[in-house]
Amino acid sequence: MIKLSRRAAVAGAAALPLVSVMSRPARAADFSYKLATNLPPTHPLNVRISEALANIKQQTAGKLDITLFPNSTLGTDPVMLSEVRSGAIQFFTLSPLILSTLVPASAINGVGFAFKDEKTAFAAMDGKLGEYVRGEISKRGLIAFENIFDNGFRQITTSNRPINTPADLKSLRIRVPPAALWTSMFKDFDAAPTTISFNEVYTSLQTKIVDAQENPLAIINSAKLYEVQKYCSLTNHMWDGFWLLANPAAFNKLPADFQAIVRKELNAAALRQRVDVAALNSSLQSSLAKQGLAFNNTVPAAFRNALAQAGFYKYWKGQFGAQPWSLLESYTGPLG
Ligand code: X2X
Image (cartoon, rainbow, N blue to C red; front, side, top):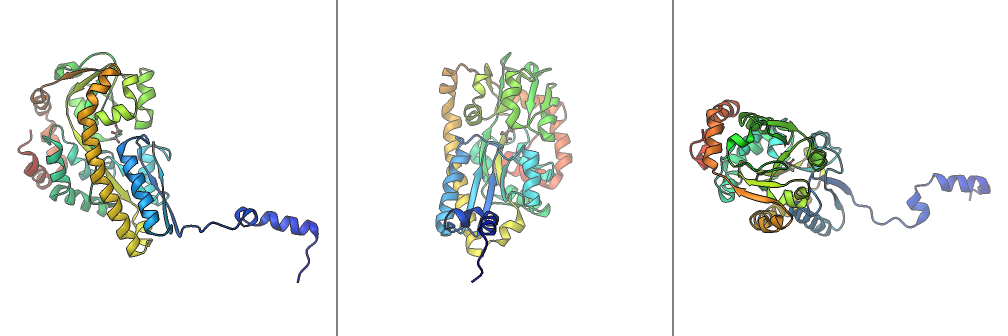
């Protein structure tokens, strides 16, 4: 038996991993992964994903432990996209339009006034259009799970005026997410779009860096944007969602049964989240009005015609290509 001097014994103890000195180690997971989102913890996307991660941990007997990092805790959307590509994080929910910086085709669901309702949007995204986009995502080195999460139809909020007609958008200093299609749409409305990451939207509105933003009611509510906005104009100008992206090396490292559990639970979470978000987006107007937001309806055809006259549809048909565009129109009817 080797006897250590008291000094050596203490020094040796200090070099041991703390957990082996402090207590018997808990059974560490075989796989400790990270799932990042850009939404507030209370948004249904985080609520349902959190439930799914608990189910995954339970069904893998604790061997796969995926931790949720909501609210852009791990960085802005462009930073988190680079992290899921590198494998620094293993899962990430991201708007298809912001993903278009890597996968140009993925912005196609965001074409202005394309889908007439959520049912049509999910028929497309769960059908041939979504299949096409997920194939394009795979070609650029990421996995997108089958069921897209819902964001919803986007509405315009401002601090200075209601938006009743396209003319009201002229020179409007509006924040848009970091994606070419958003900037293109609001430039075609003759507005003044500024790209700002979502985690800076509240303060940008509060400090008047911009006067407006656009998001579905569930996000206007969960991010408390009603505290720094006065008007909400129901334009429904775009439907958007969130692909759940996975780093292929990390995902393929999992045993096949774990992979199946992850897909099952997270795809099921998306279906539950869609129901939650649709309910919120259709019920929040009254509570947001009580918070001080002044609502007005708009005439979609007027805004859609303004985009057509500005060449928006012709330009984006050229960007996406005739075949994907006709795939989109098979769900929306003729656009432009
Ligand atoms: O950045 C936004 O506005 C948000 C939260 O809706 C998206 O992720 C596209």
